[in-house]
Amino acid sequence: MNARLPIGVFDSGIGGLTVVRALAARLPHENIAYFGDTARVPYGVKSVETIAHYATQITTFLLDKQVKLLIVACNTMAAVASQAIRDLSPVPVLDVIDAGARAAVRATRSGRIGVIGTIATINSAAYTSAIHAHDAAVQVVPRACPLFVPLIEEGWLDHRVTRLTAEEYLIPLVQQDIDTLVLGCTHYPLLKPLLQEVVGGEVTLIDSADTVSEQAAALLASQALANPGTAVDYQYYVTDVPQRFQQVGERFLGRALAPVHVVNW
Amino acid sequence: MNARLPIGVFDSGIGGLTVVRALAARLPHENIAYFGDTARVPYGVKSVETIAHYATQITTFLLDKQVKLLIVACNTMAAVASQAIRDLSPVPVLDVIDAGARAAVRATRSGRIGVIGTIATINSAAYTSAIHAHDAAVQVVPRACPLFVPLIEEGWLDHRVTRLTAEEYLIPLVQQDIDTLVLGCTHYPLLKPLLQEVVGGEVTLIDSADTVSEQAAALLASQALANPGTAVDYQYYVTDVPQRFQQVGERFLGRALAPVHVVNW
Image (cartoon, each protein chain N blue to C red):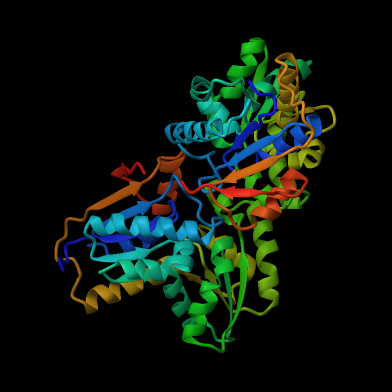
């Protein structure tokens, strides 16, 4: 395989740009092709069948673009369509749930891990399964937090409404003595400072964007797939250019968001 | 035209069920075919082109089902695709924006009307245009409230987070001396008691579900299209059965939500 090929990263929308940001920091010489299904976002409340159908459509699109590695940056797709994506792909596949689960098991001392995410991610129990695959003795305390995504997209990252919402969602988890909290949605890293305050300094936050980037770096090194070039190219594919797209996207990405190609499905 | 045919009602998701509820109360002998584009909801943040494309697709679907009247229960579609829908339809078309604008102009005494809705609805300035078409002297104060829909879908109808959010969005409107507030999104009627408390008893809330049902009743009477039968049939078409669908839908509808048909687009 050509090591100069890009890494394919995909998400239901723009949340996966937090993974692109972490990859850019960890692997600054890699090319990236990003796909965000902005016309059909959010996936978090859709049925399993619909999510799996969309996931295979996007996987096929990125494979046609010749990527050397696929990263499922969408927790919802990783939760319900991970096997379907792996079955389709001749290139290695990493996903945020497996990465987050491994990191959480390494981090916990008490053996009690909290997991937060969208309704679909939490209902799928995918994190619980992934964590138990690594350590069956760990106790997992899950909680769906459907208001975090809209609060983040509104830009209320340090707002008393967001703080109250976080308290409502997270205090019950803290009361169950978790010492590790998995941020099971690519949007959530933007709330890290506020969430850390709400759960207290004793609880370790696991950011899947960071952990999946670590996995990608290890995989590229072990398979001699690191890009030998230095001229880095990023391409962004979306199914719609929604209102506030540039503004919200750049908040996630931490840099200019371009070039953006619109795919009309 | 056959007066026994159903009224077609459509929305981007389940919010339009508040219009079905109002129609059921005002016109209990009418048949209804409801379409909710639950796989692609929400429309409120999508581009104008994408919303217009979806709106024409749904209009064609309902016209194929033989409806005698179309009601655009989605403020976002009414805001950006109203003309495209009317151009397609051989049957009369009513929409929540025109209905809300007329009712607001009738209600205001001070001539200062607040309008709240999704980002797409507010950015379109459709309410401002519709209000000015009836009375060019009225001053319109618009405000996008993107957190209301997720708060309602979370079921936090009387929660301190919702109250704080409403204060943040609405106090600036009250400070601009509005005496009428148009609820420019079909979800918002579920927040009526809380919104009334936040804006105070002096401000009249305009609920488009009620006003468009009044318009429908008047139109059916004037065109001799009222259903002469009494056995009422409701059919619900959706593009996905999302998680919490039944629970949230019945909260909107105020009755059992059945039969539901899934349209696979």
